[in-house]
Image (cartoon, rainbow, N blue to C red; front, side):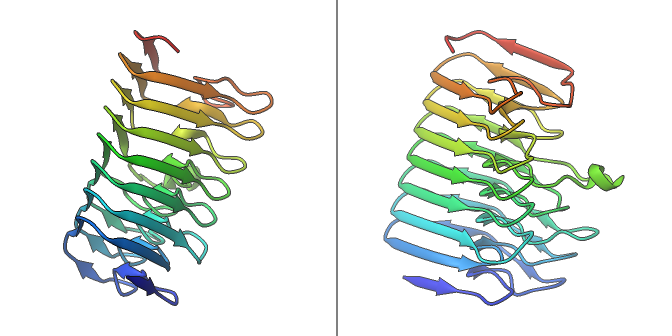
Length: 232
């Protein structure tokens, strides 16, 4: 199936102030582009969770401020529910100020959980591959970025230029307990970072920071806690 949206989601929300339920993908070949590719509407919209259990899924934001999979432009109150991936092959690309997987620019983000599958995520300018877009705290608002939990699968995430991290971002912890995880930062972008905590207890993790940035840590921001228990 191929789905395209002009100023709205390819699959999901219909625009400003929309309300939509859960999105579940079990199998098949899905190609979706819109704002976001798959997920909620824009501004004060609210959306349910997004679950991907199998199939081949390609989701791309074709508008600024919207995620590949997740939220549209948040404005002053956009919200997206939990994003859960347990299988399949997923390729996602975020728009300007929006992650490949997570909330759109200035939107509230819930929980991102990856337990299986093959996931490739490329964040837009100012945004993580998996995690936070441009947080509303950048402008003094109270956005909550998603926590990111990875327990399995093969995950490759690249942060956009001037993002805070390839995986993670502003507020919202990162927990990795399994899987094969690669996080690649661009210039002054950490591989894995959070202003809350980063906990690694298992898996194979490769975190590469861009120029003037750590593999795990923060470039220009200080996290409250970093704990690593596994091999990095």
